[in-house]
Figure (cartoon, rainbow, N blue to C red):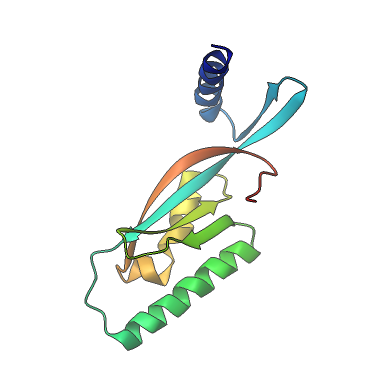
Length: 133
């Protein structure tokens, strides 16, 4: 019951804060988390499937260079492809001021420009300093 109540409070706080700011404090017992809004981007297979191997290699090289540039600039917090040959191709987590900035940055990716990939971007809250283990 306590977990359900805590989850409900978190959802209310997240929804109300998501419209007003990009960070807020969340307390759970003796621990305080600084929650930050990121932008979670799902990369999906795009409509342009008929690309010769030379052009495809060029697009992939540009795609990786674009991601690496944004990582160095601090605009991408996390990036990686999915294993396997699925509709969803990878994930990017943008560290930007707003969704429009994330969309603008991702729209400059050669794989997006060439129609090899399409994107879906969603606001996503995560505790600052979180890491994968």
